[in-house]
Image 1 (cartoon, rainbow, N blue to C red):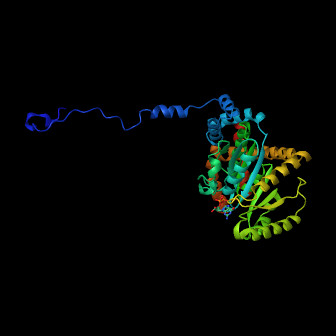
Image 2: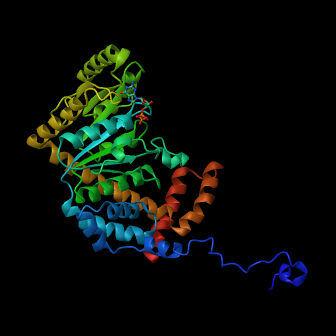
Length: 368
Ligand code: GDP
């Protein structure tokens, strides 16, 4: 439409028709989206992973973490094809209560490791809190400042979906992909609460427990049975006024360790003090880990432990699949609330309710 201002009545003012304005939506967005959504096939993932392509590795890990069946199918194929190229790493579990200094320490251990030992490092995590609160204790803030920008490191926060078993399985599968991509050192971080430590222990060659002096942790660790699974204890924050306290705690831990039977590895866990923040004693901690690995590789325990872990994961996978199959079955899903009500109302015993549900499930399977 002609602008009214351009009529002769408004002689003093004219308006040009101007140029067409560009869309406020980026016209390339669609193209970019399409490009990003392009999925590789399993062989392309494997090829990229074996080349050490970090972006392909990240995408493959995303598939492993996905709950979509089509993603899972391709992820499983990738994992299977990567398996022959995996296993050649030292897997270290690192645990400690929130605030123990895990991220500070992993940053320091990682940088020291990359500077002094050959190869690459992947840092993964098992974070149990994600299950309940949908939040996480470990968090995904850039907690490892130096390591996160190091070209030879790969840092991946904890998978979030599913039960602890599910989260742990995904971390274990990610280890396989990382190893196939040439990461010969793997750190698996976990929070020192609940069952996550056991899950972490079941996938590593060395389990390091980070402790603090003077917090009552000494007893906590013993009480929770966590000392039995530690292959080494590292007392952090041994700096400034804290050095004496840390040394005292180390003595207490060593004494406590005498109460335990000799571990199957044949190596008595060592207790070392260090400071992650001031980077003191880092080399001793790494040396403790690698010395242990040397010993267990020569006495056969290294392979034995990995075999035991494989067996454990076979049963874990079976359990998870059975559980999922049962609880996700539509008939069972619809029957469970009624059964629950019966049990809560005292109309039925738990065992009868469980038996009826299982019978129904097996009948459904037979009739399929
Ligand atoms: P996380 O929750 O176990 O990952 O612990 P962080 O690494 O986030 O550390 C918790 C707090 O302890 C932070 O404020 C760190 O700066 C501090 N911290 C970590 N390591 C040391 C250490 O070696 N010495 C001292 N004095 N403080 C430390």
